[in-house]
Length: 136
Image: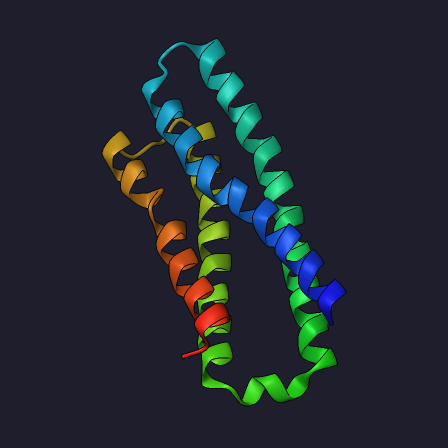
């Protein structure tokens, strides 16, 4: 179980690195007006999205493996709430893909909106870590 947990954490860190940085790239992308700069951000966003998707897949794989190894944990309310927050995080992940495609197509929201959007994974991280560590 400890090996599963260790690799789960490694992939969570990988996923979260992307979740924190991709929306920041969106802010910079919107601020850029010249075509070469926009093309550079589109490339960076696509590559980062691919890496963070690998992180998400590994997170889910090792998370499911831990549940399979210890299914009794599903009886705990804290884990069920944590899993709901992970589903919300997956929704955020896919929303990032949609925003990335909109930016590539020339459609964008304000820098301010992307700055607020960038805060969502941090709030989810706090809740998920508290649930996983404190187990209220």
